[in-house]
Amino acid sequence: MAKKIKSNVEELSNTQKELVFQKSEKEKLAAELVIAKKELSFLKKEKEKRLAELGIANKELVFQDEEKGKRAAELGIANIELAFQDEEKGKRAEELGIANIELAFQDEEKGKRAGELIIANKELLFQNQEKEKRAEELIIANEELLFQNKEKEKRAEELIIANKELLFQNKEKEKRAAELIIANKELLAFTYISSHDLQEPLRKIQTFVTIILENESKNLSEDGKYNFGRMQMAAGRMQQLIDDLLAFSRITTTELKFEKTSLSNIIDQVKAELKDTILEKKATIEASELGFVNIIPFQFRQLMYNLISNALKFSQPDIPSHILIKSILVKGSAAKNKKLSFVKDYCHITIKDNGIGFEPHFSERIFEVFQKLHGKEVYGGTGIGLAIVKKIIENHNGVITATSQLKKGASFDIYIPA
Amino acid sequence: MSIKPLNILLADDDMDDCTFFKQALIDFNIPTLLTTLQNGEQLMQLLSSINKLNGLKSLPLPDMLFLDLNMPRKNGSECLSEIQQSNKLKKLPVIVFSTSYEKEVVNNLYQNGAHYFIRKPAEFSQLKKIIRKTVSFIANGNTPERTRENFVISLQKG
Image (tube, chains in turn cyan, red):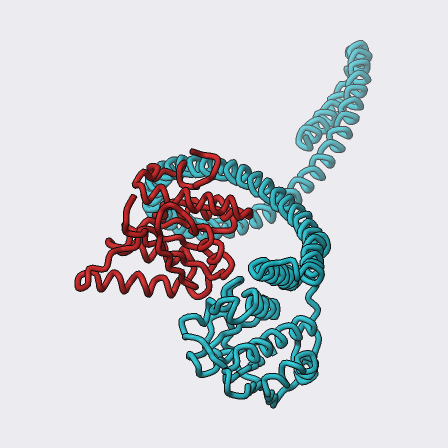
């Protein structure tokens, strides 16, 4: 552009030098000058236009330079950026390497896992087979259980029936118990009748017999007198039987009240009651080592009365009666009796006499009701006395035994809980 | 009618009952020989001596035995059992003679081989009649068949 401008300036100076040459040719060239002037003004105008355009173009250039600078700065920044990105790429590559190692390790692990899976699968298969077996066994077991349940139900039904039966039996037992109470009451009533009503006609027979024997004796033959005498005796015997039976029944129907009682006291009472017989038989009663015993006093008094009066009754005709009574504390084992506890303490009471005794084989029979060893003409009595004795001992939860030999006295051994 | 008296045994501990029995046989058209025993022990001693001596002295069995039940030392039932255990003694007609009548006791006696059962009547005339009736049965050999129905002899029947 600067060159173009310079060439234009030279052209202009050449034109002026021609004008000075041509002044002479002024007239000739006056016309040409006006034209040329016109042309020059036009050119001037064009020049100005070009100059304006040059200013604009300069301004444009300056702007373009500024832009270039800006681009260069941006390039610098972009280069820095690229360098940073390269660095990052390196880092990523390193990380990738590590990741690859990791992947390789994981592959290996996967292989191991696969092996293990195969084994596990085999194990599962086996377990499945076992499960099927178990399932079959369970079916059988279930069937068994079902059967057992049915059996249980049957048993339960049977139990219900058995329970009903038991209930029924319990009710029956209650009924029986109630009946027993009634029966006992009836027995007591019977005892009462026996003791009163039954004795009344008997007493009348005895009264009438004595009236006849006292008032009509002279009118009777010897046979007649004998028969009346026998009648009197039979009536007296019946009186004795009723009395003894009543005593026997009282032993079971009366209330059993135990008390610590002195045996000596009881024996003294009995001795007082039997005073006349003792004198008659010239008897001695030796009682030693007697203490207190837990007994039903009135029953034990009757027991002692029966035993001592028996000893007096069955004494030997020509020998004074001697009765020895003693009481000691022993263990049950000493009694050698199955009915006693071996370890408990017992009171062992012995009543020993020197009377006629009896053959050993009668030692149990003598305690039975109505059992007698002698005819009633020889030794009176009803055969109830020792039965009462045995009952009393049973009421005391004890035992009584008798030992004897004919003509060698008798010994009664009593064991009652101490 | 036999000239030889009937040999009758009576085992009874009651003295009065023995007297009644003796009196019942006084002036009876059948001659009798009564032996009384006071208890079962005496009876069995006598019977066993007859049993043993039989071969030597040829002692015959008595013709009949009247047996009381309640006796000292050995009772009537025990005697009956012992009698039935001997082949010889069991041929002896046993008439049980008792004060009381208990059906169960009577059944047992029948089963144990007694011939007849008599309940002792209270009236002497009745007692005499029933003793004589029973003795005649055996004396004349027209004893009723031994059945449970005929077992208890009473005055009402025949």
